Amino acid sequence: MTTEICERVVHTEALLPHLATKNDITTIEATLLKWFIGTAIGLTSAVTGIVFAAAQLFH
Image (cartoon, rainbow, N blue to C red; front, side, top):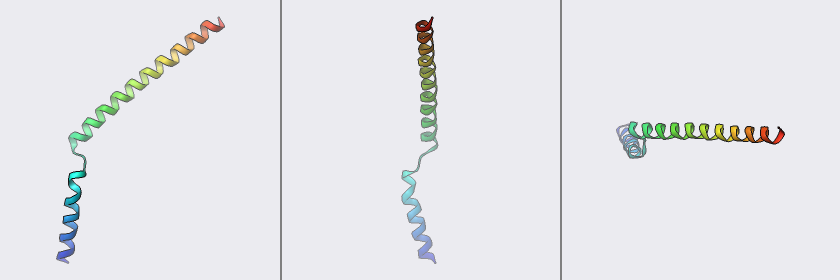
């Protein structure tokens, strides 16, 4: 039983360096938020430009 527990602890400790830290998650969250906002602004601008171009074409 003790050797099984020791093996599980060793296995768990081997995984620890590969897990994300709180700082990693915060950084990724901020980066994703910037990308989402930038994409939303870009798409809104593109759609607005297409609508105005179509309005000019059919007017």
